[in-house]
Length: 436
Ligand code: HSE
Image 1 (spheres, helix red, strand yellow):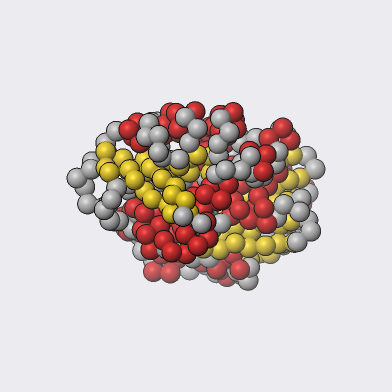
Image 2 (cartoon, rainbow, N blue to C red):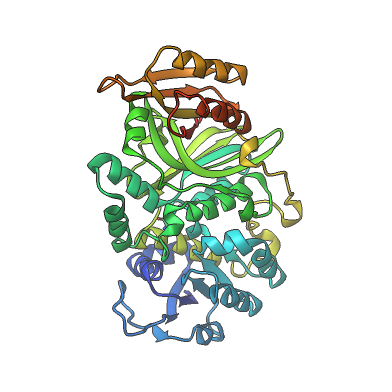
């Protein structure tokens, strides 16, 4: 059996999970590849720290360069995360003719265009299945399984920590900080959990998915990003009364006027499968023009789940290690000279439906004034919910679901509504997607 030697940069949650998966499934992986995959070296900041995997037979070092410079190692796994030194180490590995597998979504989203070019120049592969949606093989599905389609849109729950927090808050009424701490202990959260909570991690993944979907160069700076921290239990309850769930979604859509790339809280009808994706689970809904809507579901974070995706890339590499570059699947699923820039829409130019919660004085004519302003701005109303007053003279909540509207028209209508004397607080607005 051919031996393929692997070196790991970073032996934390994902690195440890990868070693465990390789060990546990050694036989099947050998039968699938015809290769014996051996992890010979691994680097870690502190080699004395306890690990989640056995390190028997693995030479540990604090110096990643020793691994890159080992001529026997053919595949480098970059599982340390962060920008530097990860980026320089990947570049050095590629330039030394080594294939690289990474789970580093920030690096691919921000520097993937440059890194894929360096990989191509050196006739090696930079693989990144583990960077998006943990264990779900979404890169493979987009690049290969859906390659007969023109992708119209995709929509995903692509941050396990965020989904875990939203689910625990909804189901158990748990406090935000407690659930976040639990997610960190379970190894789901990023080193800086702001990345999860503020939607940056989801934006990294969405940026890559959009490029896979539409054949556009990676353009992370153009992803509109909102986090989950503004959600209130009140809106969760009102949304449920209207037949909706609130999820933190990444949406990429190709329209006649440009591409949308956005990450934000979203109301989705409760009867959609994706509305019921809870806990750390992720799901990506992809609409192809031939196949229609397809849904990919699985664990989005965690050691073994992410390790499963890393190992899938190693298996792919073992199969292609001796094949010519032109027989390999291009990194973003489109021939690199066919990647095309398309206009990316600003959020104000995006069209969606909206959930609006208005805090109003309960007096005659208020509702008429609100609906008149909406009508004057060409915004039609799909549903209205008015909550009964708990005590005389108090404010009441009016909840409206609008039809699709360009965001700037909605904003201009809202500023008129908020200037009414009977409106006491800024409106709460959450975008709504029908996902059909
Ligand atoms: N922090 C990420 C998440 C890890 O919670 O989804 C997987 O990318």
